[in-house]
Length: 372
Image (cartoon, rainbow, N blue to C red):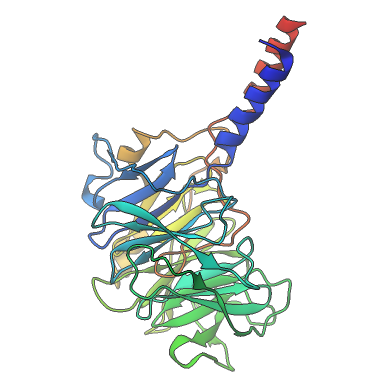
């Protein structure tokens, strides 16, 4: 083997794995789907099976994205039982991949970006209108998905809805509840409060809304991830906010304007992403590990005593890598999602890497030395 061939193989191996960017989502039957995890797609079934000794079902099929983008985010369209996947293809960064969870098939929807930057945004998928709203380059954009559960031949387009009232350095944290977008960690807005955009009236409310904690303190004003809890039907009423330090999970109810403080995730990983269903909050960390926090809407005593557990049946088929991601420690809870599902900034997404760089480097040095 020539030195050039060896180096090429090492570079190919590293790029093929380190750039993997999976995501998690639920279908409308509340099966947990892990897409792009260790190179495959899996259905982990419903919550009652996750800690068992079985294996998640391999649902990998043709037409899926390569999951090689800088960040991948998944969104559940509850009316269509479709998962919309953004940022999963480095060659087609604007495209939206659609997984029809009923037909178990993939298709690729072409999207015209215009002035929208697909490498730098945060987004939600509105439950009732099935329209994406995204903050990118100081502007609020929209992308109407209609009732698509499979791609059509006509490209969709991001529309510049209006300029957002935020400075260029604002890292958006967006959460959906009651068809309102809640912007957290906004400069100049008090800790524990959120700016609100009313979707159906395309209107930024002039006053921030506070969501106090039971002891009178406030949710910290810091960057983090947010994800909305679903209902069996109807719009979301609650969302979870997980600070970047994973110190706790804050669940905000926009009907009562109250907040619960739950355990932060056991894996303290600033690159983790999150997705909420009805009765659980999912963490996908940057090593590919998947864990969950059980949740019951309105049951404060049960929720405050809940702890995080590993989704064993995913770990059995796609063990997490120890080469990247946050350190494990006992502690709190976490969650991250976008729109009708997860919300996380693009460009700093988790990489489910299976290559340990130190080992790869040592292997390369050893092999090169043997050739000299």
